[in-house]
Amino acid sequence: MLDFKKPELSDMDWVNSCLSHANSMNCEYTFGNVFCWVDSYSIQIAKYKEFYICRWEKAPHVAYSVPLGEGDFTDAVNQIIDDAKALGIKPRIYGVTEGYMLMLQEAFFGKFDYEFDEGINDYIYSVPKMISLSGKKYHGKRNHISNFKKNNPDWRFEAITKNNIVDCIKMHEEWLIENNDENDEDFIEEFNAVKRAFENFDKLGFYGGLIRNGERVVAYCLGEPQMNKRCFVTHFEKAFSSVQGAYPIINQEFSKNCISEFEYVNREEDLGLEGLRKAKQSYYPEIILEKCVAVYND
Image (tube, rainbow, N blue to C red; front, side, top):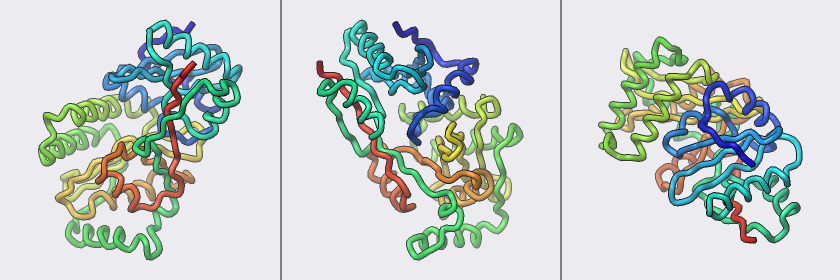
């Protein structure tokens, strides 16, 4: 039986211990992700033996994570199936990467259907390439950054600390107004997740950076390392579209100043949004991590 509860900071150690066994760079496999989005997706977590299991309850579907940890994988998946049946719903396991899909196919042959959606695939990039932006394909990015520096001679990069978090929140509020999204439910939920991230920034072990033009913050980003120590996940990134080059320069400066020790950076999904997809593809991902939803059909 799975005993689900709302994630709290006191859960971070045991969750991270389980996540250290995750065989994937999936962006969902971080504690900060579920902690920050807990209210938006009605997230609950459960510890089953040596496994961590997450349950998202946002309509229209309740979904579970793959059991992450060590031990009897088949037993843990059966617990998910039983929990879903007790709720009167079809068992759905979200964000299943190729390795875990093979494990499900071996343990539950023919009992799961697999639904693919390009919008939930992760974009994973080489950190050294995000720093150098060398080569013909990044010519446009370098030009945008050069123009930003030319047009904003008083610019500077800062690592995010408790001393400048309030400036990032203010910038995000201005961003909502600039984009006419201050009343959009999805953007409000994102802003609430951002504020939760900032309120617990140090405790969650987050890294962040911002760009100022004079005293005004024009871009920021933040995220956290995965337990595999090879990959960093950028959870949030905001820049004023009216400031040419603000997005490229925060990407490059943050990569250079804060995450240069990592091999990869996961910049998460495009959610099927055409503009976001185009922006993510313009950085030429090293890996597009394909994920699917496993739906129990037995």
